[in-house]
Image 1 (tube, rainbow, N blue to C red):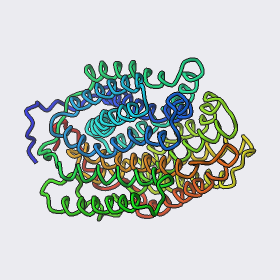
Image 2: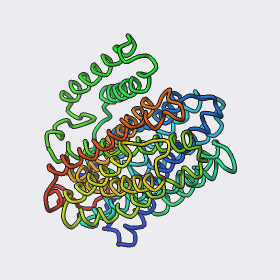
Image 3: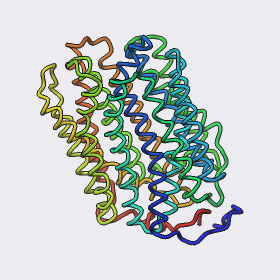
Image 4: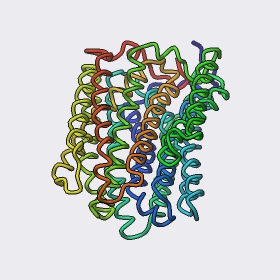
Length: 477
């Protein structure tokens, strides 16, 4: 394929340059992950500060994840066409401005709007930065290791987020949870201008506006019904209309995408078991993770009476497990393929969920920490094989779209996990919250079991053949 960009094709960068680019791009992943985990631990404080109940808190979290999920693929395609570094920097500016709006929000409605705007900015960061990394790493084994490092950054942000958020809530207030994004955005902007090369894909696709609108509408309506269902009734006219709306949007999306020459999402990819398995696995992993984080926050602060800082520190075993195991998983993927780390991920997540299925207001703290550590280890093992498999399923020139599809699945899982967790504990008092959350932990177990099925369709002993064809070229092949 002939590149259509006017940018000159530079030589392959040195190893130091490649890993410097990875570090800069990982900063954006840290920013996106930090914003999720730091807000999670601050939800009770936000609820008190703005007089918001559980339903409003769910929207504060999911406004971010839903917009992020809905726009990721278009952002990846636009970055492939107009320049990945340019899109990356635009995303940083928008994310920073939205963070300031959240910090100054006078009401819950303004905060939800600010969180949605943050989601727009974040949609330009995660898949675009991953595309930059994939196009910078010419060797499949090195790329798998880099993706392992990339995945470990989310674990690190999970570790820093709750603890930092707890400290800020102890000494300041919930608005500081958003002010902290400012120095990170400024640092990422400066570093990207110096170190990150511009790159585009040859023959990048046009924007699929009908597909984009249908995808976003379907996601918002489906998750909205999950959030509002406990309040409006699952069989109420409004809920039934929501079910119908989500189904119509999904059917319309499939119809539109199957007829477009350049669809937002190539539905034919889902006919490949390896690719579709990676997408299902991404949803399952992030349902389990976000359900764990929200149920943990509400249980420890409402039922056990812990401070935000103590609740944040309790998540350290989860975050440490994810941070340590993610790069290890990346090395395993590069040497042996995706199956073994996925089996380990399924086993650890299942074991962690089983520790919590009989949660009570007096469950041993040691058991809680063990459960969080097991889930964190499972999360760390899962990310690299899922990401590498999905990215390897598309040509390198479409790396932005490949990363966006995986990231969309992650954020969909996050939104569903938050909505389901909030729905389970809505209306439960401090003493009843532990019992009300038990179905959520059973679902975490189910997500772990699902990863065993995903592992069965993964390449058994080596990386996907498609991924071996990648070569570095900022303009695509």
